[in-house]
Structures are given as C-alpha cells and as structure tokens.
Length: 458
Ligand SMILES: Cc1cc2nc3c(=O)[nH]c(=O)nc-3n(C[C@H](O)[C@H](O)[C@H](O)COP(=O)(O)OP(=O)(O)OC[C@H]3O[C@@H](n4cnc5c(N)ncnc54)[C@H](O)[C@@H]3O)c2cc1C
Ligand SMILES: NC(=O)c1ccc[n+]([C@@H]2O[C@H](COP(=O)([O-])OP(=O)(O)OC[C@H]3O[C@@H](n4cnc5c(N)ncnc54)[C@H](O)[C@@H]3O)[C@@H](O)[C@H]2O)c1
Image 1 (cartoon, rainbow, N blue to C red):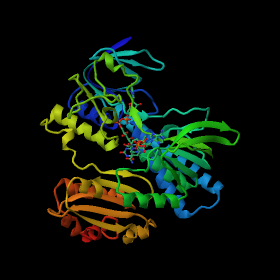
Image 2: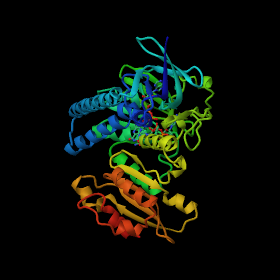
Image 3: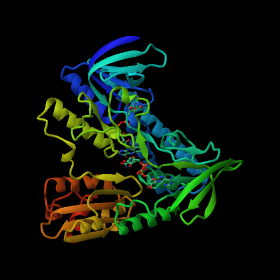
Image 4: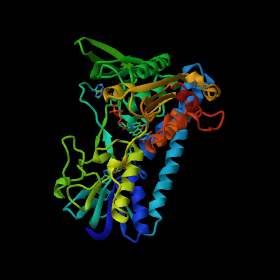
C-alpha cells in the first residue's frame, strides 16, 4: 500500500471537479484527482451524456433534411453518425485527460476511491498497487447513474442511456420507458433517423411542468415523426424471442398489451453514484434517495468534505456542476458570498427536434402564484430564420407581469431555442422588462430576433 498526502482530493472527473482542480493547483495547492475509469476522463457529459447525445441529435437532423427513404440507407446514416460521435468523444476525452494529467500541480490517478476515515481515502487501481491518500480537503464529484425499475423476464435487449450509446446499429423498433429529458431526446433522435419508437410513460402526461398548449404542440410534432405515446403505463416484463424481444405493458386500468421491439431503453431517472464510496466511514450524511446532503455552500456535514454536481441532489445539468465550482471558489478564495440561493432563473433545454427551452414560470405556475399576467405567443413559422433552417414547427411563449413588465417566464419550442433562452434568462436575472427585449437590435436573419416579435404580442 502506497501512502500519499494532498491538500485537495477530488473524487470523480465531473464538470465542477475538473474545473476546480486546475484552479486550486494554480493557487499553489497540491491536488489529486481520482477517476475510476479510463473511459470516463471528462465525466458523464463528455463520454456518455450531453456531447454524444447532441452529436447524434444534430446528425439526425441533417439526415432528416436529406429525406433518406429506405431503412438500409437510414441504418448506414446512423452508423456514420455513430462513428462521428465516437471520434468526437474520444477527442474530447483525451483533451480532458491531458488538461489534468499535464498540469504540474495535479496528480491524476485512475482507480476507484472509497473512504477509510474522514481524511483518508483508499484508491484501488486495476493493475497497480492501491493507495491511501490523506487529504486536507475532499471534494466528492462522482455524479449519478441510471436508475432502472425492476421488470421480470430475461432479455439481452434492455439498455440504459450509457449502454445504448455503445450500439452502432439502428434498431428498427424501439420502446423507450420514461418520457423525461433522456426519454424524449432519444425518442426524437431515433425517430428522426427512422426507428419506430414507442414511449411508455407511467405518468398521465409528459413534461408535467410545461403548460398544456406547449405539451400538446410537442406531442403532435413528435407523433408526426411516428413516435407513439403510451401514458399511465409501465413495462411489466421483457422477454426475448427469436425476432427480438416482447415487452408486456400494464396500463393504469389493469389491462395489458404486448409489443415486439428490437431494443428497450429505460430512461427512468438517475440515482446518485455513491454506492462504492463508503461514505459512512467519513460520517458523511445522505438523504433518503442517497444524495449527499450539503448546505447552500455545498459543504457536507463534515466541514472539510464538499459535494459537487449530480451527487449533491441539485438539478442534474453540466452547467449546474460548473456553477457548484463557482460557489466553492467563492468560499475558498473569494468573498464567501456565492451560494445556491443565487441561482434565480436556471434555463433548461430538451434537445428534441425542434428544441424545447425554458426559463422561469409557466403560465399555469404564474397564475397559481397570484400574478396578473400577460401572455405572448407565436408559432415557430413566424421566424424567417426557422424557414431557412427548415424547422418551422413549434411554439414560442412568454409570460409577463402586467404590473411591472418583468418577464416571469419563457418557453421556446423551436429551432435553436437552447441558444435564445440564455438571452431571456439574462434579461430576467438583470431585471429588465419585456420592453428591453422587444426593442433590442438583433442580428438578422437570426432566431434571436423572434424576441422582437414575441414581446410585441404583449
Ligand atoms: C444521456 C444524457 C444526456 C445528458 N444531456 C445533458 C445536456 O444536454 N445538458 C446538460 O447540461 N446535462 C446533460 N446531462 C446531465 C449531465 O451529463 C450531468 O448533469 C453532468 O455530467 C454531471 O456532472 P458531475 O459533475 O455531477 O459528474 P460526472 O460528470 O457524472 O462525473 C462523475 C465521475 O465520477 C467517477 N466516479 C464515480 N464514482 C467514483 C469513485 N468511487 N472513484 C473514482 N471515480 C468515481 C465517474 O466515473 C465519473 O466519471 C445528460 C446526462 C445524460 C445521462
Ligand atoms: N438536455 C439536458 O439538459 C439533459 C438531457 C438528458 C438528461 N438530463 C438530466 O438527466 C436527468 C435524468 O434524465 P431522465 O430522463 O432519466 O429522468 P427524468 O426524471 O427527467 O424522467 C424520467 C421519466 O421516467 C418516468 N418513469 C419513471 N419510472 C418509470 C417506470 N417504471 N415506467 C414508466 N415511466 C417511468 C417518469 O415519470 C419521468 O417522466 C434529467 O432530469 C436531467 O437533469 C439533462
């Protein structure tokens, strides 16, 4: 057993941790980063999350614009897109690796970390001697992993988002269980490539935090791609047969139906990746779902141990993990003022085609909160840029406080919505009124200029 000392030990190569490591090293701290897998340098986002999925979404949109007709051509197009995704991920993984490995103040170790005591962590390496690292400060950044509900049966066709991304063949028929971010993004992407997709959702509807008109528009556009939705339904069993696999779906009213598919994706949420950490040996507390409990400055109940990113139970987005880094920076080397409370309007985007992006309140939420509101709405086709991009479907919507003119919320379902929403979020965070966005000079022809027209509806 080798013993090492370090000022900061970062467990997991997540977004916040990999940003914190060079920051602390540049401040003169000795920094050790431990990542359990050589295929995960750069973390979930780079390897099995945002980047590979959005590369496939983008390729699907290009293929759909070419209107390939027969399945064999579609399958070839998917294989090409998959190869591109693999090349991109491998490039980014290696860049991420080198960024830390080549930094003179950072010791990057590949191995699995678990606590021995509050200041000591065991690192087990595949083909090398284990280490005990004694650290003054410890940052847990181990992310989240897919949560899979139990089903009966025997199948080699069950996937989660990680394992499905390893498959280079386009399935002809696919069931996707869950219609959250991952379920909808995969459904839209595979259907755009040409897979026959059925989505099985236990709830009575999807995206429950969206207004009804937006949900209706999304559903009709996804259905037009050929996606079938089965709501209030659960997959009970998955049983392989010579042609693929048969899933048995039970509806809320008790009736069952069978569906033959080639692949079943479970996209039913993600749970904290803490099982191997032996947190109890450090005395670190977790909540009933296993997420590490932190205060608004991201410290755990053990003052020298912090938790960053998905593992601390905050919103599961790469940009939130990055913001966790900013909070920790503020507390270690800044004025100690930044906290989770500063996050006012967090924009989100679901990368279906066209994309859905949102910030702040929906119409229903604003009414429930007691605001007197004005609502602006425009169809996607109102944008000249959307016509150029051949993505004219969708719906843009903004909610404004009638009394003050402040923007309470905005949902953009249309081309490049994930870009435009950041401008609306900035306006909201800096207390600008809807008039500021209505009367701004934007480039033309851009998607952003839809804000001129959208807010002119008020
Ligand atoms: C399919 C998919 C698509 C997504 N798309 C988006 C998107 O478009 N936009 C967005 O913002 N977010 C997206 N997300 C969410 C986003 O990927 C995560 O919120 C983000 O990556 C979380 O980062 P993190 O800092 O918590 O840690 P992670 O990036 O999850 O890193 C944790 C690391 O810790 C390592 N580790 C775990 N346990 C140990 C241990 N005991 N010892 C050593 N190492 C360990 C893991 O191997 C992993 O590399 C997506 C997620 C998925 C699954
Ligand atoms: N574009 C992005 O920013 C992006 C993309 C992908 C993932 N993510 C992050 O990853 C997280 C996890 O994504 P996710 O889609 O796995 O989770 P999710 O929580 O967004 O959605 C899970 C869905 O599965 C349904 N479900 C759960 N159990 C079920 C069952 N047994 N049968 C049928 N349906 C069931 C739920 O009702 C829900 O609709 C997201 O919340 C998000 O934070 C972000």
